[in-house]
Structure formats: structure tokens, C-alpha cells
Image 1 (cartoon, helix red, strand yellow):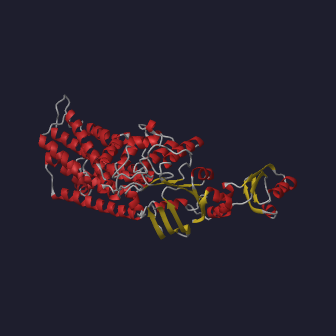
Image 2: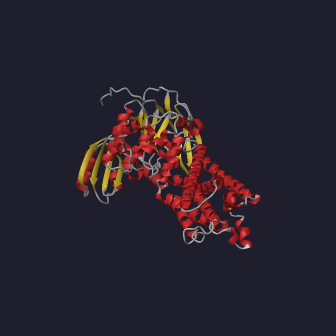
Image 3: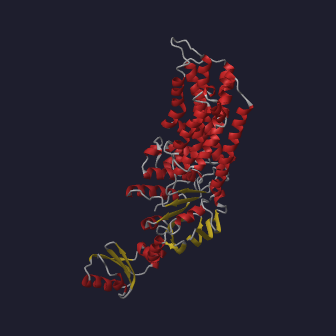
Length: 267
Length: 303
């Protein structure tokens, strides 16, 4: 074996070895992560394409025949509901990605890096929230192009409410992700979200439900999010709606946290 | 300074003792093969070394740090047997993502080049062969410029060419003075790439020395022949026979006097294709781990 003449960078320690700040949390990783998720066609279908198609389907009655919008308020309400739905699916899938990454062994790979578990979860939550934001922006843009007209402050307040409240589903996704160690977690979570949306007033307006069903709807985790997102347009930011969002966030968040602790304790 | 300091490690999984009072020290700059049959406790020991498992008894220090600290500081990194990769990332993105997690990391193009995958930087992970994925894991492991590199059966499932290329890259890297510890059950890998071999059996170190020292442990010669339904017992009673092993239709007899064995096989049995070889690493391996290895597998000791 001949000795290498080349001076090796490996043998010289130019820097004191350090632990990264914030447990490895950083924006470069976040950017790469979001770009990677958006490369997945199925994810894009669910958070962007389907809500837009649903919007077109559900809004046909509200649209007039001759290019004159029959009922602009209903049209806008449906658009906001579909944006909430897209954001829900986006944030849930972002949180539920922990299950996929555990089943693929990526989590184990990351444990060989300085990334701390809490920083990992924080990045998952931010990825989820970014997907939620993308879903809302795309849906609103699609709505604007296809005839929705709203005052600027309604666009902004509705969008913000839909986005911030979709945090409930980032917590829900994390909970599902830590609960089900499976690559196909969204095949379980997806239908759950669809059913919750049905009973929570996203696919069918609450006013069209029977009084009994309306009572049931108020307990769906979707209820408060939808109410608050539509509130800038049509009112309805009740204490019940706020309570719904807060309570479900705390519940899913605590459950996800408990499972996360159990997961990291198992060294 | 000791790169690795494992003292009295014991790890049990239920009734199975995977690692049993194992003590091992590795000096900075050594290239050590951790050799043993499947189920000998190699992976469990490596998991404890990297902080992926906690020993029931004993202590682990890596360059003076706990495993978690050593990993966080980039003192140690590892190429695991089947560490997961995300299919939707490209090769370069996977490395860039990992690099962003360290306080200090080598430039991405540099580690790709050193791992020999600079040419496929933009390829999706899903489209990479097993060997390319393994070199990607190697590139990730180089990011922190670790003082200790741990490889757990890194060439499992690779074809001959893939193995050769992979070891070429590792060897080139090790010449820069990095400490390398690799687990393997391929004897030729241990023989070709390690300065020192630690032989492990049933969770304990059974031999530890240079390649030539390990070879000397098994004295005598090996007579190998094709002999279906060999009578193991009668072979054992021959003069100078130290061990008999049957592998399908092949019989391997370790002995101090190969003439007796060869004469017996060719005149009293239907043996053919007879070969006599002097002691080699494989013989040492069989002598030191042979019977115990099959016991270990039979009792279901894995990892």
C-alpha cells in the first residue's frame, strides 16, 4: 500500500467540534423537505387538485347560467371551506410523515446525526403548516380566477384563520403518525378527514343539516376551523367555534406528545 | 486517546443475551474488523456504541464522550446495514439535508466525490442501485469529518463489483487517518481491509489480534472434499482431527495431519474433489465460531 502524499483534511481538526444550535433545527432542511414533499404527485393531488375539483363540483348551483354569479356569498363560502379542507389534508399529511419516515428507517438514520427529536418534530410541524398555507393560497387563487369576489380584508382574514386553525390537523397528523407505524398512514387518515369534513360542515353547509346533526357537527374537530375561516365573510366566530379549535388542538397535541415521549424513551 | 472504550457491556432481549460482558478498546487510527457469524451480537454492540440502544450493564465512551454526545458533535458517524433513505430526495439533496443538521459539515460536492457518487448527484434515491445507496450513506457519514467511522455489514446484498468499489472508497478514506470499525461476516473483507480483527461469538469477544495472529490461532490444515452423507463421527475419530464441518455435500476437516484424513477419505469413502489448504482466516473463523455459531442461530439469537 502506497502512502498518499495528499494532505488530508480528515486528520487535522481545524475547529472545535460543536453541537449544532437549536438541536439541528434549520431552514435549509425545511426548504429541502417542502420541495421533496411537493414532488410527490399523490400529495399534490390531495392538497391542491382535489379541493379545487370539489370547489367546481359543489359550486355549480351557486353559479348562474349566463356567466352571472347567482349567489356570490355561497360561492365564496364553498371556496373557503374547500381551502380549509385542502389545508387539513396538507397539515395532516405533513404531521403523519413521521410514520412514513419511521417505517422507512429514515428516523433511525437521523438518529445518527445531531438532530434532536424535538427539533425533528418542530420541522415536521412547520413543513405541515407550509403545506397548509400552499393549499389555501392555491385554492384562493383558483377561486379568484373562477369568479369569487371578496373584499381584501376578507381574503386575508379568512386565509389567516383557515391557516392558523389548520394547526389542529398538524397535531392530528403527528398523533396519527406516532400511533400508526405504517407507510400508509394517510390511507387511514384520509378517509377519517373526509368523514369529519362531511359531519363538520365543510362538504355540506351546517344550515342544511338537521338540528340533531348540527349538534353532532359541533363536536367534529373540523367544525371550529370551518366556522372561524368563514367568519370574516358571514360571521359565526362564536365562543363554541374557538373552543372547538383550542380543545381539539390541546387534545391531539397532548396525545401526540405522549406518544412522542414513549417513542424517544425507547432507546 | 481511545476512539472506542466499551466496558463490560451486556444487553438482553427477554431471555436472550445478545451481548455478554463484552469489553473492547480501539485506539485512534486503527482499522478494526468486527467479525462473527450472524446473531453473534455485532449489530447490538454497534447500536450501543452509537447510542441507538442502551446497555443493560456496562459503559460506552466514544472519544471520551457518551454516544449521544459523540454523535451530536460529529465525532462518530455510521453506515448502517439498511438505514432508511427517502426516495423522493435526490442524492445531493439527501446529503445537503444531512449536512444542514451539523454545526460544521464538509461541502456536499466534496463528500459526494469522496464516496464516488459525484456523477449521480441529481439522481433520485429511488433510482439508485443498492451499491449506490450504500455509497450515499457513506457520503452522509463523511459529512462531519468524523474521527470514528462505523460500518455495520456495509456490503450486504452488493454484487462483487459493488463490494470492491465500496471498499476501495473506504480504504482510500481510511488512509487519511480515520479510525474505522466495521462489522462483517465476510472473512475475506476482514482479511483484506482490517489491521486488527475482533472475533465475536455469542455476544463475547473470543479472539482479538492482527490478521496473522488470528490465523495462527487455528493450527493445522483444512481438508475439503465433496462427500454426500459424510459420517461426521467417524471422521472425528481420525488422528489429529480438530474439527469437522458439513456444508451440504461438502465436508471440511481441520486437522494437524492432513495425510491421514486425505488417505481415509479417498480410500474408505466416496469422497471426490479433495483439496488440502493450509491454515487461513476461514479456518480460524470456523474453529473459533463454528459450533457456537450454529448454536446461536438455533436459539434464535439475532442482532
